[in-house]
Length: 270
Image (tube, rainbow, N blue to C red; front, side, top):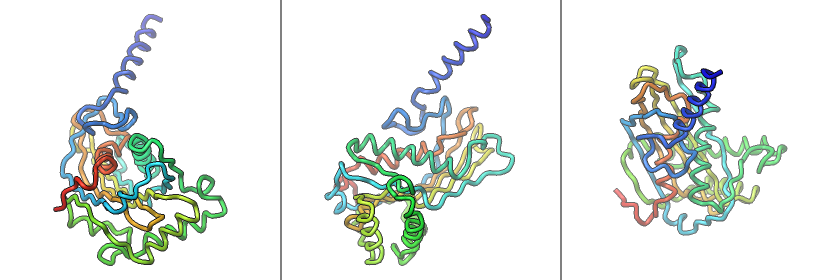
């Protein structure tokens, strides 16, 4: 019994330690629940990013409005068969973790904003499931930057390292689709993560790692315009003997937080 008691005490101590803020991962973590990894430390490198913020849209920002939240449209979870720490690794798990980070950061930045899941049975009635699926498919295929469809992330690759305020005018067809969903479901904003691709690297670092690639966008659908987007690509390698088994989106959190908290007028165009 004495031995069992020591095990329990040690377990409680470990849980307490592992729930503290991570070391050297996301910097100034804006929320307590963002990116808890126990005692794992990650080395982030080979980082490419592009950030774009529409100052015109942000001047009209309503921090008490309703924001609709869509799931990530394209999710790719890539891992070898012999991955020893991939038991919790899947497309659904990746999208859920990104949503967890997004929810916590929005709640911190805009506590009065109401977030509604754009799923059948939530903000979207069950009978609208086919309509929403058709609408989303059409939206992603609509031409946007360089005449390429919205779901194409290639335009941002050539802009790596650039951060700029930019008033990008959408095409009439894109604007019409955005406004349509705004009035149909009475939402002001739409969170639309377009791409999320994570590839596990079992031999990276001391105990594994992964590559992260994502394109995340936010739209003012009432006015049919982009508010901001961030494209991020990086490599995360473990610096400890603890495998990165979950909370894959943690290193992405500072990029999203930066977009939520930066004044557009302070972003220098490059």
